Image (cartoon, rainbow, N blue to C red):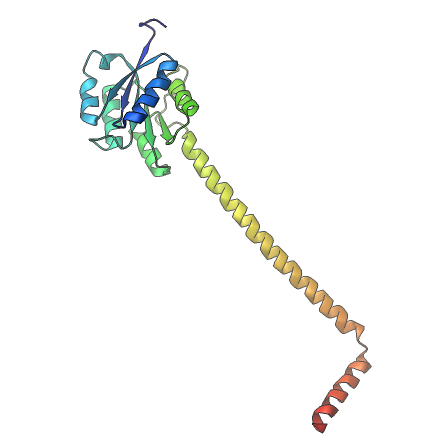
Length: 202
C-alpha cells in the first residue's frame, strides 16, 4: 500500500503494551499509528501537519489529563468528521451513552478481541457507515442482553420450582382425599369409639 493510501490513526493511551498491540493490528490493515500519551498532547497534535491527516482516533478511558468524555467532546469539536473509538473496562450503559453523546463513534469494552477492534475501526471509517450521534452500542447491548437472559432463566427456574411445589401439594391433597374416601363411614365411627374406649380405660 502506498503512502498516499496509508491512513493515519491517533491512539491516545499511556499503556505501552496496549499501544504496541493496537499499532500492530492497525498496521495489518494499512494504518499508520501516531501514539500520544495524554489529552493535552492529543489536542495539541490536532493543530500539526499530522493532525490534519488523521482518519480516526482511538482513546482509552483512563488516559491522563481530562475526563475521557470531555476529551471526546473537545476532539470532536475540532475534528467533526474524524471517528472516535473509546476503549474502557466498564460495561456501564450510562458511561456508554455519555461517551456517544460526547461524540464517540463506538464504545469497546476491554479486553477487546482483535477482530472486534478492527471491525469497529473499519466500520467507523467506511463512507457508508452511519454518522448519527448515537449509534448502536454493540458491546453494551450484548452485556444487557446477557443480563436479561440470566434474569429470565432465573425467573423460569423459580416459577418451575413454584409449579413443582404446587403440583406436589395437589398430589398430596388428592391422595388424602382418596384415602378418606376409601374408609367406610361406619368403620370410621367404630374406630373413634374404640379409641375413646381405650382412652377411658387408661
